[in-house]
Length: 182
Image (cartoon, rainbow, N blue to C red):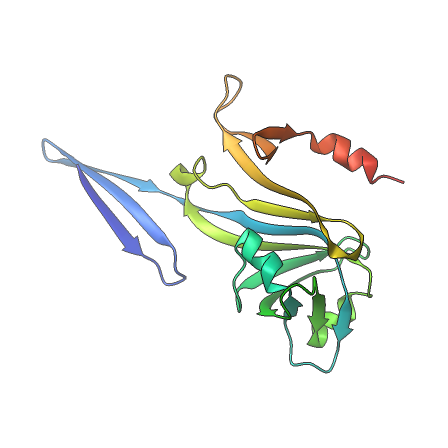
């Protein structure tokens, strides 16, 4: 069996496994999927600066805890208005717990709005069990409420099952949703 990895233009890799069997060549391509790699859930907007050139300014300490990098593109979903945008991250003051939307992104929010900020990554489908996306949830004043991770695992019921973990403990996200429902 021959294994070959091809680097694609957008930074992902395509893995091909080839088997030679009596003049027949078989290829198995491990397809790429896009997954959530890191998430800041419920962080509140601390400022909006329309006259800045663009981006979102985040506390680098919070970004480091989930693995979000400077100039990385992220999706931003406003829980209050439903607005969905994409922009890149710049780092603000360490320890400030800032979340500042800049430039045109400033028009999508109000100070105090709760946001979901999500970084994505392409992985080979076969790696789905190995990746454990980190998630921070926030309380008022952007203090970290929980440090979680997502876990895809195989169970007797299905090949791909999902749970939210807090250390070694499973989090029942339905209970969390009930706490935040008015």
